[in-house]
Image (cartoon, rainbow, N blue to C red; front, top):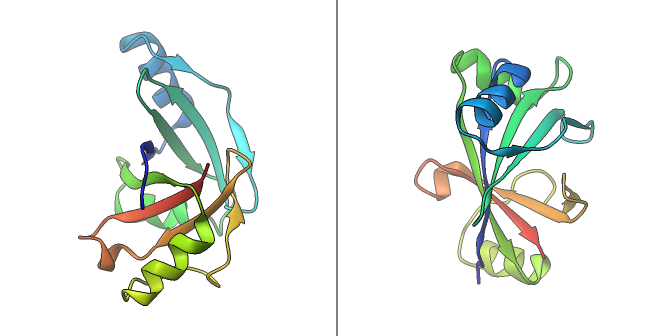
Length: 134
């Protein structure tokens, strides 16, 4: 059902410093920051030959990333995103197998302009999973 790893998301306390570290220290191709108000984050994508890294920074006081950084002030891995061909079919199959879909269960448009869903970390070994339709 799941396809390739689309990205690993890392919550960071300083978006500019983290972006500079990936660009300057590691020599990665780093995109421009983009605000995603529907998700309460500002994101920066780092392009790798086989996947991406998504740096996450809180956008507003209600951001879920703010809560994550309150618990993890140095930042850390927030979620992994896998590609799926049909997000509704994937959702229905996962729910039938007992997985919990976060929110109201309906896909929202993610940072790539494609439908996404998040799956409860307690159902996946403590890891928040994002599914993105390709």
